Image 1 (tube, rainbow, N blue to C red):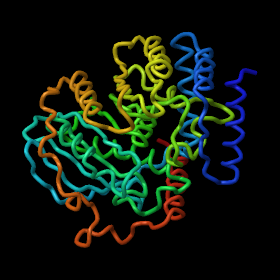
Image 2 (tube, one colour):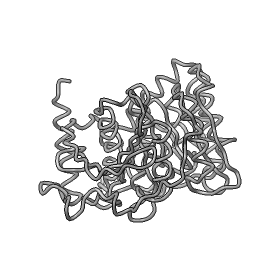
Image 3 (spheres, rainbow, N blue to C red):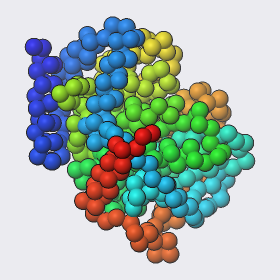
Length: 387
């Protein structure tokens, strides 16, 4: 047995034990050499397009099963709440909530281009870990406003336990399930807007938001463009239960890592953004060559790129945002020069979804156990749904 396979076997056992005990599992870091060996072992399992596609099917199924989303939860009515529209130069922003399962709300802000002609491309904007409400941080507001000025409808949404999403805590052992399903339902929300072009749907996010980006890209075929930022690493799967607290990487039937999960998006356009001062420092030499090899076997080498910033650290800073704007403009036939970030910060209190005057509905669930029970019921309904 190779070293990489032995490591994977240990990870599978640890996941099994954690799942059996209903405990969150935190993925260990691999050494960089172990990560290279593991990717090499993955590469040895496929040699042509048919073999890769068979592997991809197994990995997707493993991700969904590990995330307790196989079957996917039944889709309840979104019941969207929209209020507080602010008209800004070149765009507007409003406060939005909708239900991902009955009684559990996705919360965020919808950025809308001014004077743009439908059908309009649309982008989900996931945030990483940080302050109490990273969704309304300067970096998120800037990229959402700039994309809207380019002509893109943007929905920035909270991680579970952050911002207005306080029906459970972020360290909930089911956070990965909640957040992946919230991402799927956020695509449902965007595609419910008649002005949105369902052939141009993207997602971007940094750090933990990068994890949300490539997980959604791996399991939802509606997404047509992906820009995961500072998170695609073969040796580190994320330090939070919302990224690696459930057995999405290893099980008795599948074995993968974040680089390969990102590769599942082939042949659709993807820009992997990395830097030299965090766990994505090896992307140009380790992770990206593997991803590119998948795109090549899918006949789509021109659809993927790596924007690497060797002298930068773990953020979604100006240069990384510019790389994203250029990539989006190129693939969606937009003008990158219109990605103007000036005068794009509004008072964070005005972006709150639930306030004293606009409270969360009284029937909203409260506490992780109640939310988990609602998800279990939604999966049960999906399992009996003939569709």
